[in-house]
Amino acid sequence: MPEFLETTIDKFTFKVATDRLYTDSHLWVKWEEALVRLGLSDYLQQTSGDVAFAEPQAEGTALIPGDELAIIETMKTNLSIPSPVSGVIKAINPRLEDEPELINEAPYGEGWLVLLEASAWEADASQLLDAQAYFARMTAEAEKEAKTR
Image (tube, rainbow, N blue to C red):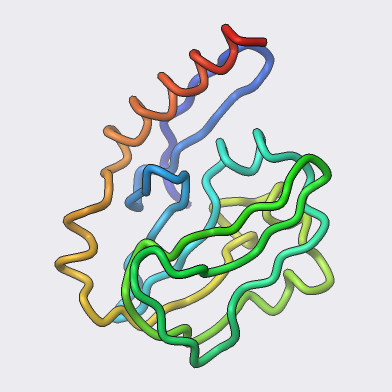
């Protein structure tokens, strides 16, 4: 079970798991013995609304950073999720087809999107944020958003 950094802004409490890396676009990336697991951060899933549909790219799809990794439809918006790393999709979360709400219920657990075999992990990882840096950036963004409401 990961440890979390946590902050409450307005009426929302946001968690950041400390055992993974993050992107500016609010995805998490976790290295798992030659594979990389990817998912939406707690902040992104909360601010986007209830997930109605999640469609990751198919197994075997080769991606480079910026390629579309998945499409997520929520009650508020449609999201095109960019891949933060290069590699080939080895598995998609089979539960998301029938239970897309797992993204909201367990963004750092059962709500993961895909497992990717990374092809340039060292280079790609150097472009990602550690949990502390992401937490600071996410907190600043959440505070700015709260002031505009």
